[in-house]
Length: 180
Ligand SMILES: Nc1ncnc2c1[nH]c(=O)n2[C@H]1C[C@H](O)[C@@H](COP(=O)(O)OP(=O)(O)OP(=O)(O)O)O1
Image (cartoon, rainbow, N blue to C red; front, side, top):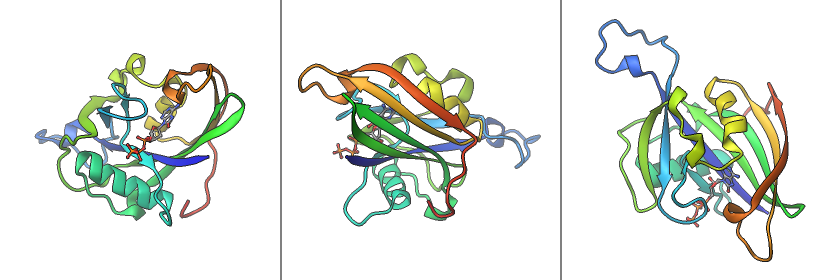
């Protein structure tokens, strides 16, 4: 089983050059990446990837976000927003920790793995993303929490991103342990 992370940096559009903006404005843009290689290539997602040995999920989300788009994040500024279990042909394939943050340093920059893009939350391109994303990501972008199981079926050795999405269970408003 693979353990992985996704990280969704968010900001308020009005906190740019708008003199009427307030620091309290709710975040309404999310930083997505267009994945340039590997699993989910060509699709949009959050920065993220697989845990390396001895790494915590928070450390992984921070490292992947820095490697993929160049943003610096303090692990303590990550808010745990979800836990997603992806099953392939009935077997656990990936367990994914989802984080959200409005605190980060730097400007996003492209890497070999990812092309970053700030996207208004109402324009998230769900038709160019993993099919399950439309089921849980809107809740995460609204500031809520999710726990879900998503079941895929594949023929032979097809990878997860070529498998058929068949069904799911989803819970919202879940609690996570401090430090998860
Ligand atoms: N079904 C689904 N929906 C949304 N997001 C995902 C899935 N399945 C997934 O695996 N994912 C996410 C979880 C991870 O963030 C990435 C996959 O990680 P990957 O890019 O393979 O990991 P890296 O460690 O960056 O890869 P390499 O360095 O080995 O290229 O997709």
